[in-house]
Length: 210
Image (tube, rainbow, N blue to C red; front, side, top):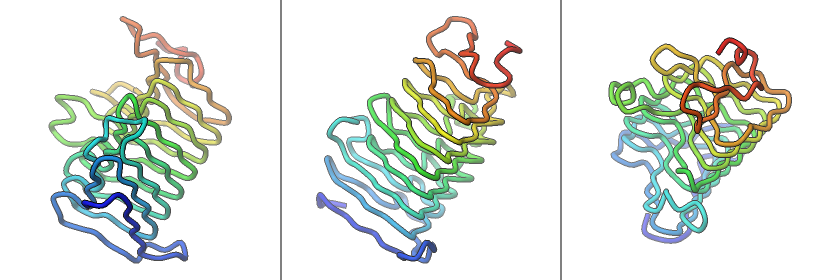
């Protein structure tokens, strides 16, 4: 995508009737571009949504996704520094589900990230279900990823589930720099990423076991 603004509309009735599939990159965003997408499935692309300036979360490219499913991406499914999602599913991608970088932010209302990070490269280098500097949302489900569930500096979630995300067989659901602010959230393990040895935030139900 060479322009600054891109609208991709598959449907406007809550169904996913549009499809982008089998490409090296489903949608490529140039610097400072803006993408709005609704009613679309992105399937079996190497990278489904990729921003040139993905590591610039302040003024870089921005994506707004509604009623979108992303599945089967060979690498990371979504790589963009500013992301807003509503009723989005990111599943069965062998790489990271969402990567916004540690300067980026993700805002979510109805987001499911499940079954990602299963590739051999992820087992060597490590991948995440969702990674960003700041993540906030409600009705978020992050589970059954073969990597860190949520990796962020700041995290605020309401009425959400973060469970059964495993790194080398060990639970790693939430890893943050600051104490996560969780309200009505069912989660397994939360860890302080700055601690030399595993240190929990005591906000998830298995934290007392470490």
